Image (cartoon, rainbow, N blue to C red):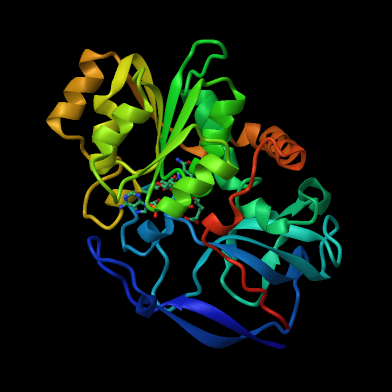
Length: 329
Ligand SMILES: NC(=O)C1=CN([C@@H]2O[C@H](COP(=O)(O)OP(=O)(O)OC[C@H]3O[C@@H](n4cnc5c(N)ncnc54)[C@H](OP(=O)(O)O)[C@@H]3O)[C@@H](O)[C@H]2O)C=CC1
Ligand SMILES: CCCCCC(=O)/C=C/[C@H]1[C@H](O)CC(=O)[C@@H]1CCCCCCC(=O)O
């Protein structure tokens, strides 16, 4: 038997409340004693804190593919770790593995069918990348741009990305550049993040939405209007971008993080002006969900890891809120 530490949901913030640390608590638990056939014991190395988790804190998540976290139950999400004991044919001790349903627990017993093996050499040993640029957020950026963005090399397109310094946005903007957009402009929440986007990640310009008027700053950085918008945030920032979009443009409806603490359905309703702008300018705005493209994930991971190794896509390491605490035995 093993004594482990785990994080459980202590209380719910309510559908329109801000999450705070007190909604969680850390407690000790016992794992084992027996490993069943088809199970492994894994040690947690990295956990990912993602926006959709806010929805899992509600009793009703508002999305059919998201189950609510139970009160006093161990929370779960994306994680990576190492196999310490195995009763599976497909996994051996020391294999690195990942899962969407990783318990926030120092060590846990997991069924093989919930795990995918990962190859550390794909990311030069930076296995936390499997939760970011070479994981679900990177795939969201790649497949979001490719499936819904209509980016065409040589078409002189301007792309705007909101939530641009986040895990999905930072990769989406770089893919826009790789795929041939002439300008890629990021929107984020600090001058330091703006600097990183332009100087380190190769964005053409960046706008700090917490300083000054977003519409004015966008006019300056997008003199030819906006053709493709990778929308991570929704709300007034997205209204300002859509107002400056060109005819026949495309919105990639990836997420609406600015609305997750509100009691609204997903996707949240648009204001009349934005609805009218989309219609009159013939702009597409299709909902994108990375889980609907499972058959493209393997090739996507290979492509993303290659770009990262070659330096074409830079990983915004300090921009991502991955819990980088190594839990030791
Ligand atoms: N459709 C899909 O399949 C998927 C969708 N998503 C969605 O993509 C979006 C980005 O996710 P991800 O990159 O992983 O998240 P991250 O946590 O890495 O980044 C999110 C960023 O959003 C910004 N933000 C937070 N609140 C607000 C607000 N009120 N207004 C404006 N910006 C805000 C913050 O940056 P700053 O401080 O710079 O404002 C924050 O760092 C989310 O909406 C998420 O739900 C994610 C994965 C899959
Ligand atoms: C109503 C909330 C919409 C939030 C949009 C968003 O961030 C979606 C994220 C998912 C994306 O499609 C792929 C993912 O990995 C995210 C969800 C992961 C679901 C894991 C399953 C967890 C469970 O058992 O409920």
